[in-house]
Every structure is written in structure tokens, then in C-alpha cells.
Length: 205
Image 1 (cartoon, helix red, strand yellow):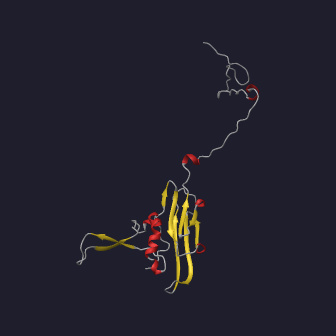
Image 2: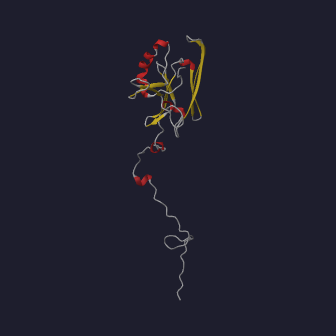
């Protein structure tokens, strides 16, 4: 079986990687089992236990391993993957619009079985409102590449805010003007006079 380079790494795997490495250390290279045995209390062909192979990585409805699916929560966007077969300078991470593209490639090299060349590309679409400029990536010493992006600011935080400075002045009557009374739409002033100053005469029957 070929190594699962480029596959996602679940949090459970991060704590069990040394154990898995010891199990397959005799092969001279790190391997992650795609299947694990589960014991069932049923006899089979005269044996005391029946060993059934089951997928180690449970698949989602889309057929993608769950450990490859990005985690999105209060801490933002995060996805981890196994890149232990690649050196840091053989990896690249770039953002194209709202898509994060991870690529790993190394040329032919001897691996004990012959010459081998490895290459993978994985793409992840950022959730809505996440800023592509905030994406960061790290690679650990044991070969786990992690992509992260902080959560977008809440709607309340995203409202524009400007601090208005308070200026000190002298007495208010010197710096504050009295409001001017606007003339009514019919041209009459507040005292009953027209705009030209003449009052209207009222005729009585």
C-alpha cells in the first residue's frame, strides 16, 4: 500500500502517530493504515474470533475522508494534513480568490523499492466572510501541515467607528449661534407679516 501523503490528519491521529510509526517501523518508512481490524465475538471457520476489516477513516456523504474536511468553529477555519513524505521546501500554499491550494511535489528518489515520484494537490474553499489575506500555514517537525484562518468579525464589530474629539471652548453664548427661524412656505412670517414687511388687511362683511 502506498503512503497516504496529502491525507487529512484527525486530532486523534496526532496523539497516536508515534504508535503507528512503531508498528510499521520495520518497513523502513512511515505508513498510516487505511484499514484496522475490529474483533467481533463470533466464530468464523472454527476460529474463536472473526476479524473484519473496516475503514480507518470514515467517509462523509461526499465520499471524502472526514479528517480532510476543514473544521470551522469559534476559533475560525482549520485543516490538517499529513505531508511527512515531503520536505518543507517541496510544499507550497497559495490563495486564489477564496480557494486555498496546497501542493506537494518531489522528484524521483530512491525509497528502498526503486525510484518514486510523489505529487498531490488539494484545494479548500474558505467559508463565507472569511478573509483570504488572513490565511496562515505551518508545518510541524513530524510532518503535519496546518492551515488556519481567524473567524470574520461579528456584524457589531464590523460597523465603522470613529472617535470624535471633544474640544473645549469659552462660554456657550459666544460659540453657539441661536437657530434661525425659517419662513413658512406661504411666505408669511411668524408675526403675521409677509416677507416684504407689510401686514395683510382683513375685510369684514
